[in-house]
Length: 419
Ligand code: ADP
Ligand code: MG
Image (cartoon, rainbow, N blue to C red; front, side, top):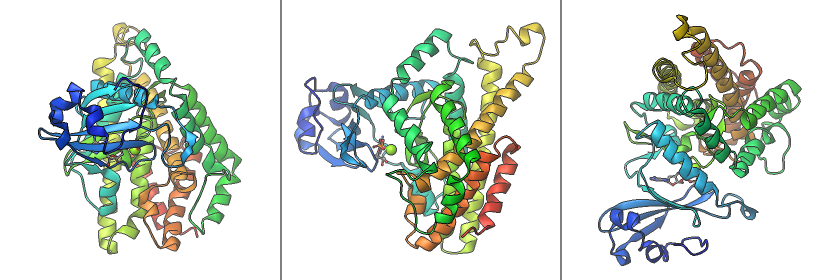
């Protein structure tokens, strides 16, 4: 495994990995019996399930090009190094939230990790109308822990700077986000595609210079406000669940960026699931029941985030930011400071949420919530609600007060017809 990079394939994998004890300890050393399946459904990498006498394991390997687009789009293998580094930080900052990591090889761009056998991708579950117990608790707390414990509210200042310097080298994947998330939705970029019939909505978005300014204000935040480590791609395809357990995978887009980035992207994905429900449920009762559950998830996730963030603020604030020496040690409350930080996070969250709602319908990487709707007239109608709510969030992020307003806004857009 120390030779130069070579992509794995099903037939060669057993022999190539057979000398790595971290792997044979998990699956067994009798490699000629290993059963190997490639299951990658993502856009960038190879993912194999390896089953041996002793157990099962996931092998994820970076490819030197973008899988979604093909060999014409080279990508550095180093993203696997960032993924590995993000995984170990996620585990440290919120133990148990990621699959266990067993082995990493930088030259081969390879990570061996726990096979989440009983878990399924959350996006598929939401399309199927399956609820997950404890979802908001896990993810709300997780977003707070990752945001807080990766920032200078908590971390030692020099450690934080070293960490940000390391992740700022993840420029290639940052570049993908900068282009496909923040920029391409707002003009006729080459790789864009969209559902037929959306032209009138797209015109509204792309002609609005205030909207584009807001989007790029957020891009500036994304690319230059390294407040904390973000997963960087926390959509419902990066979350795997059983009926009552939640894990997060695939942090290769990890960066030091603004607090609220991950939570905003996550909420956008819940909202897109919400708007798409009429196409996936059998009747309006089923639709409204599942939609009500999704809105509850959004509300609870934000609530859990706030409660956990406040708890960490009060119990783990040991970094240079808003230090106790300036507030509590002076006999003063830090409540105003906390409210101010939370308010910034809220505005970032809403704005990122709006941008994610746009890019998933207009840029290169769409999501199955909408894409799986075969009736394109219906799809366009539902996507229009999503796009228009995204616009509202971006334009009015400063004046939307509290989660109830967000929920009411979703209900209102869900009743509107724009096409
Ligand atoms: P990519 O970076 O290419 O998007 P992902 O990390 O998202 O790759 O993995 C692609 C797919 O492989 C996931 O959607 C999931 O179905 C499966 N997968 C990835 N990691 C695991 C795991 N630890 N356990 C089970 N399945 C996994
Ligand atoms: Mg993925």
